[in-house]
Length: 256
Image (tube, rainbow, N blue to C red):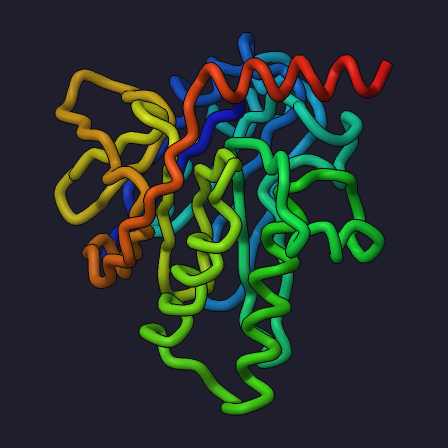
């Protein structure tokens, strides 16, 4: 599976040690890496469709101090889509209010007609990009009724969307809308969080000897500046490892 990394904090923190450990996992996840840094509504996106532990650019990048108060990173083990830039996480889209949405996803969408509608509109081939396209589309539709959505309204809509798309699907994701950092997992022991002063760090696996705890299962949560401010509806759509193995084997057989 892919791996996720995220930070939300009131102030900037140095991330080099955590990122060095995180990106060393590219040995097991060799199909791409990416980082998104946020400056208000602007996104600085750095990604390559190659193994993070082999990237000369990334090695040089991490030799210098990396500081951020909000960021998302990803390393990819491809299950859908070719190995190219367009399929490398994170993905970034703007809604009709010019709000920037950034998503990284660890999982697979096996069955969801709501997302299939975006297959011909996306730049790459991943189901992850379709999740983001659907979220932005729903935001745009809601803004036809009301020009600007509050943080509570945006959270409520993302919560509704995740309840819709998680049945039969593995949906671990980090999503940032310029203000809120949304976190969701429905796959046991596959997403953890650690409080580091004013910062909360999210990772697929614990990255150091500090205390890491599992992110609450099957429940969307949202942080703002390192503080959890929204908690969504707990759904029943847990995904299991045996299901993933069987479904991926079926997909491999179907593509022969």
